[in-house]
Image (cartoon, rainbow, N blue to C red; front, side, top):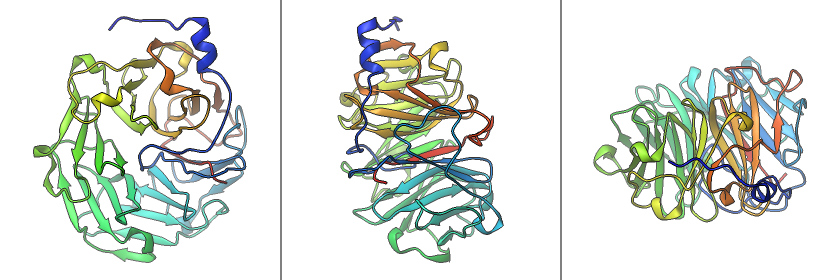
Amino acid sequence: MKRWIAPAAFLAVLLGSGCAPYKGGGTHGGGGGGGGGTGGKLYVATANSVLRFGNALTATGNVAPEATITGTSTQLSSPRQILVDTSANRLLVANLGGQSILIFSNASTATGNAAPSAVLTSAGNMVAPVDVAVDSTKNLLYVADGQNILVFSSQSTITGTVNTPPVRTVTFTFSIGAILLDQTNDRMFIADPSNNAVDILPGASTASGSGTSLITSIAGTATTLNLPNGLALDATGKLIVSNAGSPASIAVFAASVVPSGGNVAPVATITGATTKLAAPGQMALNSSAGSSGELYVADTSAPGVLTYLNIGAATGTVNVAPARTITGSNTGLNANAVNGIALDTTR
């Protein structure tokens, strides 16, 4: 792929300011919310805690979190990717070490040793949860667990400790790195780091059994995918993928690629020393910020949260500095322990 360095005019657009509530995209750990936010809340999963940063739409530098959810009552144990349900003010956590999904009510005010309002387990089924997604229309909860996607019903009313089998299981031949639900089109994107691919599962709300027989894939040398580790979807349908392999990058695929997949090149690749990307993982997108989206990236090796403006306008290969970076000793973010992020623009 031909490398292209953005001219000064484009860099000015990419780094331009402006923040507004999220309006589009998929539903998963990185999703934002609509409505008129007062400053935003950013949640970050670390080794055994979840940090919450206030004024997320402008926070930068060595800033302290406004709250830390941690302690034995929280049951947090090696949490991975997370999701914020802004309409219900709930935080859902893929709790890898506890083989469970933790749900915290009143997430925007939770602090300290707060117990979750719900703990979802599934004996014999949920073994290694790493990501979650919610279909609010069909009231389904999806859990990425090893080589399986577990589907649970009535997700909005789960309370207390619940040990229940999934209503459906979709199985694959690889370990799933991340999932992203495109609720509008009832399809799911699945990060496949073993094969350097992103798989597209149609009919996600009814899929069952062998997912390998149902998927189409974005895969091949032209894609430049290298250990895909995080997924986001912008308001125009562009698919955004974080690549944790070397060199670390963010790849943006045209909306026309999304339904059918293939060995296709991204329309834009954010990479290079100036980007500060080292091991990007889960992402959260505020689609209405700037002219075409503000992307928050959890980077475990930075360590911190990197924010890039106008990601949807990028073309070619762009070696651009993040507009904002949350990192430093006051943040509570440590190397190899920035596991997931979720953004709420409504509060």
